[in-house]
Length: 513
Image 1 (tube, rainbow, N blue to C red):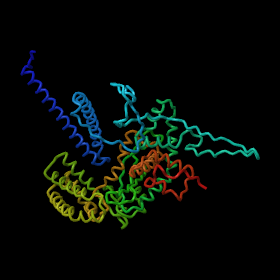
Image 2: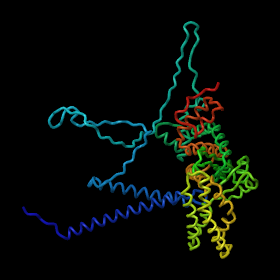
Image 3: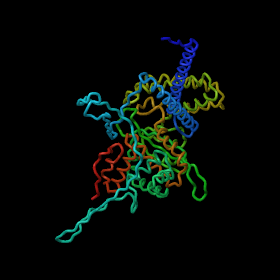
Image 4: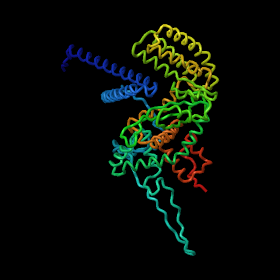
């Protein structure tokens, strides 16, 4: 038998092609890792009025990364078809709380006889595999039937009382109300889009009807919102921030710049077991009277930006200002982006060093954090202050860099207060994260239709974000709680319904006496 040998040039071309493809795959993987790293860095930065470009960058990076990862998965799957032994897939367990539906696949020949010899088969074990599946959203109608009975002796008619309805003479259940508000305010789907999605399934519900349902849900949640605020004002430390929200001016066909304020309690980073919570307030403008009146009874640490409207709160002895290093760093970083210098690089590196110290004590109790900061961070802060003071003597007062440094030096006491307050944080990112949902959502619902609409949004945000801070799924929580409240849940037991105490297996609905 003759064997035709492959030409040497063909073998060389094949090896070169393989090397070229391997290099392309390596470059692709490197690019994906780089984009993931950049995206993680951007997500760690704050979301606020000054970071609209940052939000756009994140969206663009996410789209680019989705495309690359999709192409990589297709390419890898094709490779695995040719060489399955070389592909190693990560094994991730699917959540235990999900319901399981078992599909059993028996051999083609049945489970009784051997396909080769016809002998009897005996069980040997099985192989199993799990996949994440989804059933389409399925609307249903709950028909409530209340039989009537009459007494044979006295003719009295006996019938169970009608259950409370989410909407008087309405057709929506409590679960439907929860679905509408969570999809609008947490999933950022405006009501007209929800109406279109329902219409596609043959359910003709007008957008105005959905708006009425959302209003009723907000009304039922009022006691929860009030209780969240009451608990928040008792805290020893608050984070606050605000974001612009366009509000439609009635009769003028234009919008005015209203505000949504976030007030957040979250002391988990200092080892506290107290519940995390957030409440929101809608105001028609950014006047300082709004936070001043909202926090009139609060005493403790207030972490906020440098907005002058907070200044009156700090004039007494009840509230101490804790400034935000992320804001100060951002001003330096903006100068660094425009014209990087050894000074901007050095300052950013020094501030990064302060953040690395925080990583070592995250989750530790306040006394441990205070001691560690005094030992590790205080010397770095003293050195940083010397560099800033020296730079301010050399820079023109009108330069952007001088203004950025002057911003920090003016608030130096507030910036460094976290050193001696173990409960305090180095920045105000807790509040800025609470604003993120609003910053994303307003792109979809565009504006508040009125002051009442803005206040309704603030109330629903308060419940949804507090639920999420406590690891509670908002839709299930709201559906259960508004039904209990509508059914006459006693005010003496409000605490049982708060997100930090609620579980899906709470006591059944209790009718008021």
